[in-house]
Amino acid sequence: MKENMFCFQCQETAKGTGCTVKGVCGKMSSTSAMMDMLLFSVRGIAIVANTLRNGHRKIDEKINRFIVDALFTTITNANFDDQRIIRLIRKGMELRNELINQALQAGIPLPETDELQWQGTEEEYTAKASQVGVLRETDENLRSLKELTLYGLKGMAAYTEHAMHLGFNDESIHTFIQQALSDMTTQKLTVPELTQLVLETGKYGVSAMALLDKANTQSYGNPEITKVDIGVRSNPGILISGHDLKDLEELLEQTEGTGVDVYTHSEMLPAHYYPAFKKYSHFAGNYGNSWWRQREEFETFNGPIYFTTNCIVPPLPSASYINRMYTGNSTGYPGCKHIQENTDGYKDFSEIIAQAKKCPPPTEIETGHITGGFAHNQVVQLAPQIIEAVRSGAIRKFIVMAGCDGRMKNREYYTEFAEALPKNTVILTAGCAKYRYNKLGLGDINGIPRVLDAGQCNDSYSLALIALKLKEIFGLANVNDLPIAFNIAWYEQKAVIVLLALLSLGFKNIHIGPTLPAFVSPAILNALAEQFNLGGITDVKQDLQRLHIA
Ligand code: SF4
Ligand code: SF3
Figure 1 (tube, rainbow, N blue to C red):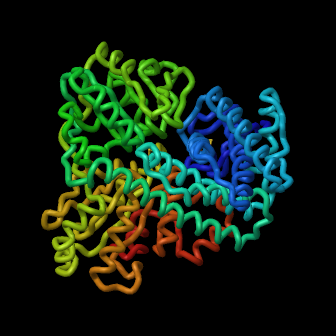
Figure 2: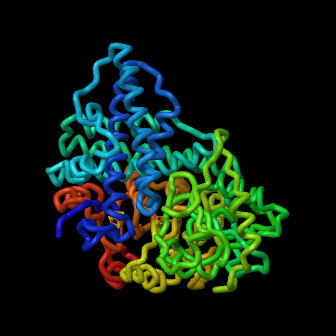
């Protein structure tokens, strides 16, 4: 069969090598082509913006915003709407041409590259896309490092965009994103130079996560230990999914006093840990599990569902909830209403609320509570208790099991691994990976729960801070001397930036699974394994030994 697309950016890529006909995620080849074109336009903008910056010209804020939004749009499971992506390409080409004119007027010479020269029309997008995708780089090692960097940049862009929604920004992150995109396109970077760029990406990944941590905690307070209800109430509800807390705040404000409750799904669960959201008595709890369970859980939820970010699973044609599904920000799905913010960034959720009022309340699928809120500030408060438990031997090891969940059967490994851990170990988690073990009732050690959930995938930053704090308290020279092991689950590109950030902070011996990235060639994998002792997983028994746990 003719290959009509190529994408290998996520863990579930077809046959562990690449999706070539249609994405396992549901991405159509037409969408993949438009995403390749969008990235082509983003590279063009980045090249001119970078050249202008080097010529000491100021880059307009709208350029930074466009680039992070476009990169976010191409993340796995974020946007399936060709028309929205085409509009973004058009806008991207306009912005690129605007910047080119700016450079011409200022007499600043620009590099000669297709990304700047191509002036084709919309009718030509599909044909052009076939020349500008992932496989345009023919050397597999260079391609590996370039794509690894790009996927890191996508994750970084997503986190930066959330922070920007809350009025927090960091120009150096945008400058780096644009410079990296430009250098990878216009310069003939070697393997060592690209490896350096990968590490540099990790460093800015730390900055982006720190920025988002600051934005979230300064806006909504520090996460604190919280019991979250996983049952249902008797009012109709709206389910909110994804990572964007600003959207949640606006939804909670607009639903107050309407008789409609708000529930979180998947990556929005940690919102319950923030003090600012506790004042809303209609913020009812968390419904369901991680993203890939939505086809069943959205049926029984009965009310509208609003996606602030990835991960969207394309509904089956028989799904009853398509007309209850709404998207916002960089997400999109054909046939679903997109809630567009106004020029002040405000979103009007009245249509969703009106629909919710006509829906039956959610059907109960489980009852009880889950506990979380162990982000850095809260854990530091618990430090004396934790240190005592480590010194007495009650806690022998921390296992970082942060990251993503996914739909493949091989992820049962993480449930089995968590169950098999000795009782004197504590899991540190963040991201939707937690749903593989956060309802197992793993108990506590002297009152410290054995699953400490810091929050969303971006809150892996909290886990890194906690580890660095413990290193300081125990007076260790190296963070790798801590009694800590890493068994991280990845799926999409936010996990890529989390991994690169951990590497840049000096963490070694990180194990990732359930499979290694298809986009990293064997030679580059070997090099990473050597430099960072980065490795994959095997089976539970063997891994418990390899990680010196059993
Ligand atoms: Fe395939 Fe993943 Fe790309 Fe979707 S995002 S097309 S599943 S590699
Ligand atoms: Fe999950 Fe998509 Fe990655 Fe934010 S919601 S961790 S997979």
